[in-house]
Image 1 (cartoon, rainbow, N blue to C red):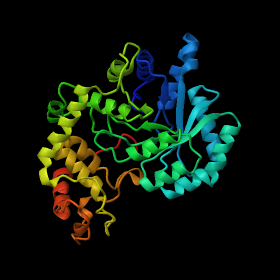
Image 2: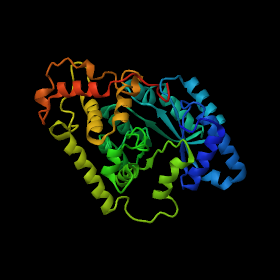
Image 3: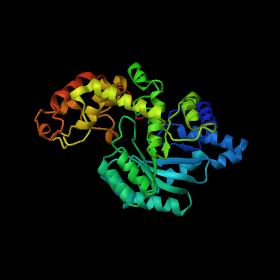
Image 4: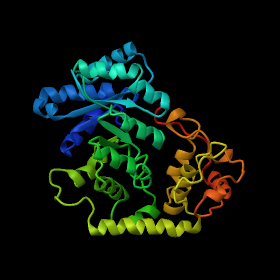
Length: 361
């Protein structure tokens, strides 16, 4: 997704991934020239190390909503760009709305996925989702998907029950971007580093998810050095044992305690009892960003996410805290008796900034 500056950059990242013991490569047509560059690197790998090439598992994705004919053409183009005769995994890219689920399970998408598997062009079929809990539950219950990609992060464990339910059904679970979307943990602020010491925040985030049984972590490497931590945690020389030892668990407890201490009585517990909001304000998500900024020093990340609201279509929230009408409907529902309208106003003051360009879009 991020090693798209040149074919040489992608080849260097692929080489580093293989050296780190990584054998699952995930990409998508929506990631600019990623598939084309990856295909060039895969062809070189096949020529030089055919056995290694044969051990790779490759996943790509198709956006929902297209016709059967368009989807068939797009899948063939994916295979051509990657230089493969068959994809191990094909995901519906962004199953975020009810109409996307209908497309994939009862509409043209269902026919497309059946055709792709029937022709032997695709092994497993799955989906990625930025959608609601209810929508993801419906997708998992459909019986159509063998894997899913969800937002599962150390600082946002909301969907962990969904992940556990999927794993219990034998459905593979990929955590979407625990390094970047999980808090830009590759560039942690000083406060967060101090709270996690002597461990790197990103290492604790990775280990936390692995300890939960998550099948796959996406790393989003832009350069070979981004894979050093993965190599250290799970490479060939890694020592066997639990993903979290006693010292790491203690660090996670200190981290949680430090955040709660800074937030005090203003900490949102993410119970979601405040919803629905008459104005469509995603109260828990906005207060989660405030929790991160105030409690853990993740100001830059919280600003980045907050200022994408309303600019990313169905990939992210549509209303920020300025949409709060101070009607008070949420107040009696909050078990912590938080002054929600005041906290939303404070969130907007802290995080509103001129919009920045997204990586994609």
